[in-house]
Image (cartoon, rainbow, N blue to C red; front, side, top):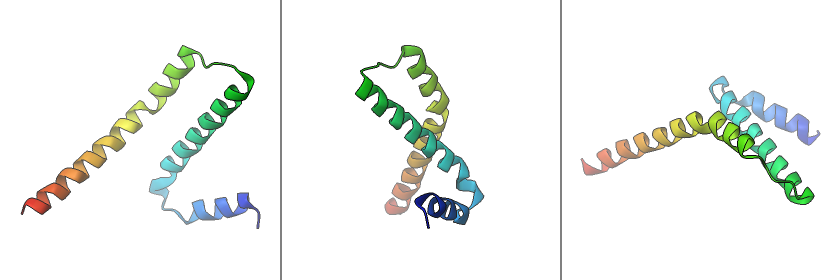
Length: 81
């Protein structure tokens, strides 16, 4: 089995609620690959490009951080009981 086929098989096992996170992670890997290519060619990202990427993922990152903080607060409340 190829790695690509194995990856698809693993993704298909996931509950559909996690597909958005898989897509986000793929976007992150694409960004990382682009950064590596720029590092090797000496190109520098434009400010506009960086701002667009930040705006694209800012809401998702903020929501993820909020979820973590809410979970942490629930956990701390349970410990205090």
